[in-house]
Length: 111
Image 1 (cartoon, helix red, strand yellow):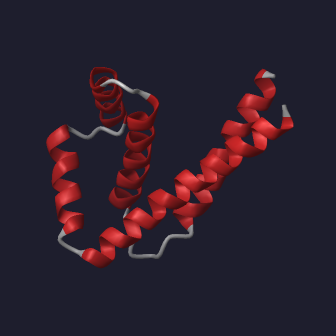
Image 2 (tube, one colour; image 1 turned 90 degrees about the vertical axis):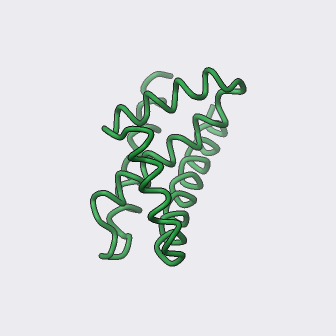
């Protein structure tokens, strides 16, 4: 059971790495870090129904990625000023979430 869980995590991480590496060459390391952090933030917002728990999880995510609230908001606002860049970022986030959902669905069907 635990082995399946870790295998699914490894598969998800592998798929995420493939998605990130297949992004256009215009995607910087900073962009990749933002994509990963924002993906995790969206998942945290869905996982925790109350704001207090959600905000704590988001703070932990930002700390893990060495981003302050201000730095994250600044990056988000910068991306918002460039619609093409923002679209590419959001497409990458969506792809990450779809891959994770597909992996979770596959794992639940195996049980």
